[in-house]
Length: 248
Image 1: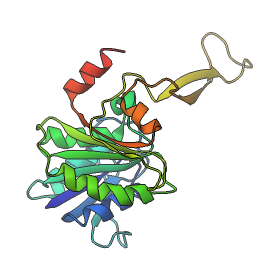
Image 2 (image 1 turned 90 degrees about the horizontal axis):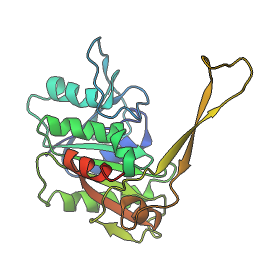
Image 3 (image 1 turned 90 degrees about the vertical axis):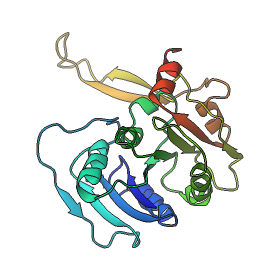
């Protein structure tokens, strides 16, 4: 099996190295990731300009061929499929993202955007996200099992698997919920605060963005299950997104 591993946190992130290590147990792995942090890019692609595609020597996963690209996560998928592969890979894995991609966050996620770009090019895809980057033991423990199981499951060409892991040790995780659905409420609520009244007027203001966590998740939603200590697995498609967020 030929597996392309991408992300939105950049080529140096520990999450993509862990996902590449896990993927190497399932087939031939090629990593193509943004040269810098690209969170929140969704499925943004670059329409003008040049790219630098650079082979990474001494990548921490010796079994994987790794490249960085001066572009977005979706650019990484497009460049890999068009330039690095003579034949399309069998699977695209995106992640492991630093932070959840649940609720409305799937609309903005570069992790999900890269997986969607794979679908747009006819390649099956899965996205993986975890709350904590300082402890990937749960990812290392559970993702191989989840990946093995999902590879046996049927899924439509326009759907992808979206997996999220809570920030707990493997022993603390209560289980895996394959019936989760995206919450129509956001997990990260935002607020814009005025930094200072000094030197500002109606035509010029300096604002600071603040994030707050959702405290009233919908029962049975991905946010609800994550907060209760479960790994969530959900099918995501444009139809699911439309249906979910038409309720909000």
